[in-house]
Image (cartoon, rainbow, N blue to C red; front, top):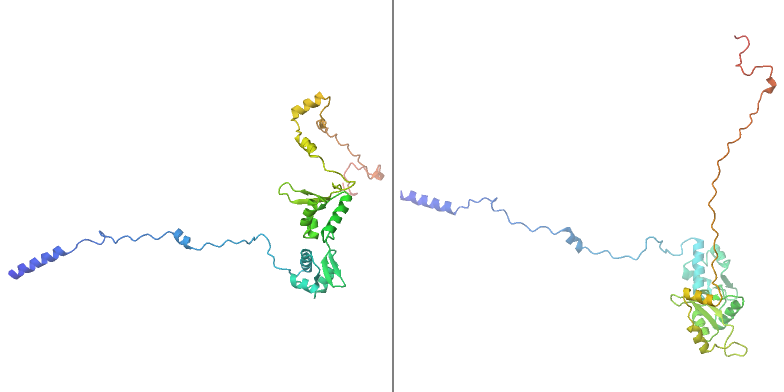
Length: 284
């Protein structure tokens, strides 16, 4: 009996140590949720910004069209400004000027291309043949005497140093220059026909008169009318437009006249009664 008691006690101790809790009562620990997709997208590299304008065609070179190659060659000759050999022009512009006879003939026949047979050099014919300040002043004088000035932009295309030369001539009192209001860029240039300090020419206006002239102020509209009335003068009235009368309504259209009907088959009158249907003979 003592052995049975010992076994029973050992069994009870084993039952006490046994864990009867189910795995449903103790679920496994929750795992941290996955990171949102935004974090993964943030790690992606940003696409580099491109300066390419896809709405404009890309400059792929001089192309294969003869007229396109001609345009490239003439534009380079214009921007260069100096006489150039044909072989050098063909290499710089990447055009077959020295091998393509059709392109060469069109290039020589261009109205802005000048060929010097002595030196075999090609140059661009600008609007004005200006190469120094003296020739520039001569050209300005010629156009001013004809009643107009010269565009500074056009002169710059003929001679790149024309703007600097015009500024020097302006300081010397040789020319007048008009400028834009916004940024003060030179626009037109005129020859100064009356220079002070020379015999027979004009003289500078005295400073006292200039100050007096600039001190005058134009009165406002009300005071100006009163001042004119006190002097027996009248302000010029704007032309009054005569109001047009209402547009006349078109009358009703008259009824169209009936056209006269032309009678035909008059030669059968009296022979056949045309008011009755035709009945073949022998039929009643």
